[in-house]
Image 1 (cartoon, helix red, strand yellow):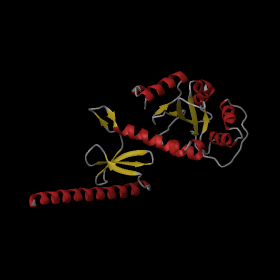
Image 2 (cartoon, helix red, strand yellow; image 1 turned 90 degrees about the horizontal axis):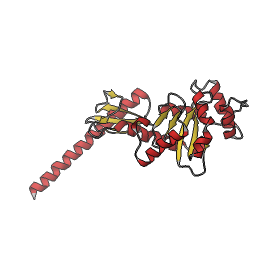
Image 3 (cartoon, one colour; image 1 turned 60 degrees about the vertical axis):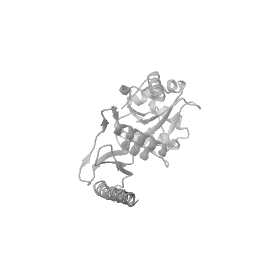
Image 4 (tube, one colour; image 1 turned 90 degrees about the vertical axis):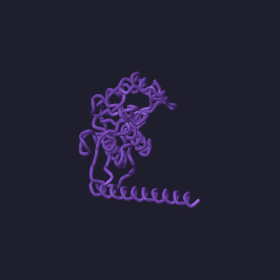
Length: 248
């Protein structure tokens, strides 16, 4: 009995020591992240690699050593399963960020009962963005709902930004979007709008060009895709047969 009690006590001491060590590592890493970035980490947790911690700030993900001294930015890949651990986490964070941003802050085209939903970061003056929108009927006919977020590539002081604000502030946003994409005359309007927030969200999610299509699993498909091609990709994702060549 005494031996059993001793073993229990030893296990308890070991576990409490591990917890204390984890708490100490957490504090060091948190302090370093705040000092370097000025931002509070959203989460800190052990990565699949010993003594390397996964840190997220919003939808950004990177790694720090246990003492907070060394920073690693890149993907962790499990060579046994060929699973990109970092990429999957990045996708889930991207999807969660869009869900939190909310469809009320997007301009939406699509059927009442969609088969698939994509979120598109778009620039009013981008050529392939215009090509995509000119074929919006093809997407909706296949059951694809398209949710637009503004991403004026030239920044918040650009003409594209002003156009995006005018589209949002129009009485009929869908009609104004179509008119703007076709190069029509767009009355300049201002109002409370989410355009700057949409642009910032795109930067946070890793958008570097337009159109950037965020698929239902959170992956970014960079650039234009014809409706049928995109539908096939979305179907593969839905059935769990998505081809890695179709993903980023």
